[in-house]
Structure formats: C-alpha cells, structure tokens
Length: 511
Image (tube, rainbow, N blue to C red; front, side, top):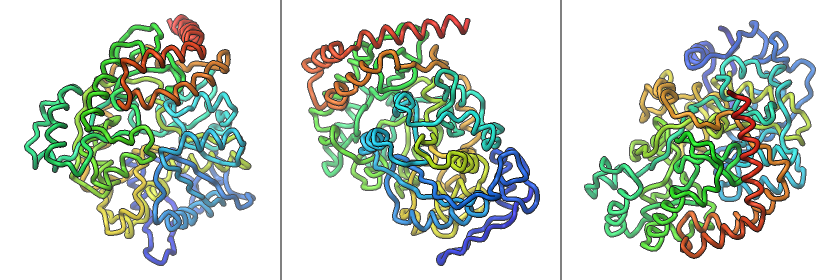
C-alpha cells in the first residue's frame, strides 16, 4: 500500500509519515482499502467519496476529558493531514468528566451546533437518541465509512442499533468487560501489602486501613460516583442505558428485569461503601467532585480507584498520568459481554452538524489512518513521544498532551504501545474477548419512548439520591427506602414493566 508523505511544518518537530508508518498500520489492523497513488485517503478514487469540490469546513469533536496544554499544537498537526484529505480542520473540545453530562444535556436541549460527540450505552446514548440529538448513520457508513465496515467486527454495530438503526460508530476495541481496581504499586510495595490476596471488595478493607494509617497525606480510595455499584463492577445490564432503571445481571442467565436497588448485590456494595466512607477511606467530596481518575493519579493523591479493566488498563492510566510503571491492577469480576460493552465507546454525529458527510469521513479516517489516530491520542512524534516501530517512549513534553482517551476514538488496534506496556497488548486484547459470559440481553436496546415522561421524572430522582448512596456519603438503611419510594412515585414500576415487555418480545424473536 502506498500513501504520499505528509510533512507537518511545526516549529518544534517534523513528523514522519511515509511507507514505514503505513506498513505498521496494515499490520495493526489495516486500512480497509488501497487508495490510488496521488489520491488522498478517502478521496475521490475510493468508494468513500472525497474532498474534490468540498468547501473548507471546521469539525468540532466533543468528548469527556481534561483539556490539554498542547491541544492547539496537536490540532495544527491534525489539520495538516485533514486539509488535503477531506478539506477540513478539527476543533477538539474536551469537557471535564464531572461537567460532561450536564454540558451535553444543555447542548442538546439548546440545539447547539456540533459535529461529533462521544457517546456510549452507559452515557445516555439511548436517551440522547430519543431526544433527536444524533443522526442515523447507516447510509453515511455505506457512503463514507467503508474502512469502518471492513475493520470493525459486526458485533459492535449490532450493539449500537436502536430499533434496527445505527446512531453511533463504535470504537474498535475490546468487547469483553471486567471490573476491578487499579492501585499504586509503589505504595503497596513500601507498606508490604499483599495485593495477591485481594479477591473481593471486602478483602480490601484491612489493606485500606493500613494505607490510611501509614499515608495520611492521601485518600485510600478515590471515586466520583458508583464505586462497586458501577455497572461494570456490579455486572448490571441495563439493557441499553444505565440512566434508565431496570436491569438484569449480565453474569447470570436470569432474564427478569428488576430495579438494581432491590438486588442483594447492590445492597451489599452500598454497605461496603458506607463503611469505607465513615472510616475516611473515600474522598469526602465524592458526591460533588468534577475531577477524573487521571487527574487524581497525576496528583498522586490516592492509593486506589475502581475501574473497568482490560489487559494493560493500569499502564494506560499510568502513562496518561505521567507515572509509567507505578500502577497495577486486579480483575475482581467475571468477564462478560453485553450491549453496553459492544457500544461502550462511540462517536455520534450531531443532528445539528452542518456537514454530516464530512463528520463521517473524519470518523472513517480515525478507523483507518494510523498517523491521524495516533496524533489525536498521543500527540506529536518527537515532541510528546519518541518512537521505535510500534513502541513509543515518553518525553519531557508528554504531560502537555496526554488525554488518556485512546479507548474512545476510532480503531484502538492502530494505537502505538508505550514502552512500559506489554508489547503483546493487542494480542492479549483479542484473547480477552474470548470465553466471556454473554449477557442474555446482548443485542437488545430498550425503547424508552412509551415511558419517556417517567424516564424524565426518574432522572431527577436519581440525580438527587444515587451518587450520595453509591459513594457511601449517606446511610443506606435510611436513605435507600426513601430513594425507592421516590422512584416508585415517579413511575419506576411502569418503566420496569415496559422494559420487561420489550425484552420478552426480543427474547421470543431470537429463539
């Protein structure tokens, strides 16, 4: 495969492109096509359409994350790739995690102009589609997304469907999931903590007590909500959207939809969170903080966080936090596959976009163009990292562009691998996808339209109670009954019944 060399005239460094990079791209996942010599990738010589005759256009990309110091510098580098390919420039707009949901809700309600927005089954995908926020993209995929269709396992697109239609393009990554913890390996070694003994959340209690006594300068556990009742640790399958109550357990085969708040597993995890909060193990601002776990790891202000895990997740976090080699992880739940994983990271095209076709061209490039993919994820070669083949090493400027969002964008199998990571990372990702328990709800997405009034009312109740309960900030023995009562008054039982009805019909049609 040949591509023309693109030289990025940036005052700090000149990026390498050319054939060596493209060969690596092919090995890492392929481009799904070979454009003619001299034609831009995705250009007029391919089935993706192309830039011929296109007017200049600025694409906006919204995603949850911390703004980066060198963001504009990286945008300049990205734009020197995009202009000759699709005559577009990119405006990267990260929104802090703690402000993300409110910002998106306001944007969608106000019909603000946007082009590409990160979304996920666990992050309001279904409800946003119901509000008309995202475009249906099946036709756009056929016209400008051939690279996506040729490299992405069909299971991802199945998981993105709502009533048979696709409103988001999934990231090509792992589709199995497991929950567990990421912890500070150096502190564990200094204090002689036996992390190999940790199998359950309860096993962590004596360890956290030792950390609290020995290191009063840090918080033993940091969270901004959920803790062990995060869907990825509790293994709750909300059948389409975690913001809409009613779930099954995805590590079981029971198909009865229930409020998770009535499950023994949920109550057990609430009790642990409450104990830890009272003992000072959990950050006291857990219900209000807008920090992300990456921010906290950068600040060296915690020992442990609860995470959705995969091979190499701890090192991904460590690299993003400028702490390569200092963190480790423990998987504590069975591996599962559900719709929330196959559509666990997607890019949607906003219904307010002035050029949806250009947006799909860009998303297609993120799935096929190795140089562009790594620029967005890791910054500029020679500035933010150095590279030998597929392996990259940090520089003094790495902290200036380290968004830690590689799992959100395009084809993760095109990503370079940090020198502190396992060089077999991508092979292990593929192995991780095997032999996971498949949720009975895989492929089903609840249509909330018949109960949209109740869903809206429940959202306000959940905003009032959920975060405080799940972080241990309030007594669950007193507050959980009050919470359930408020949920029922807002229409919980009607939502559960409708979700069960639709799910039963889905199961009957599958057999």
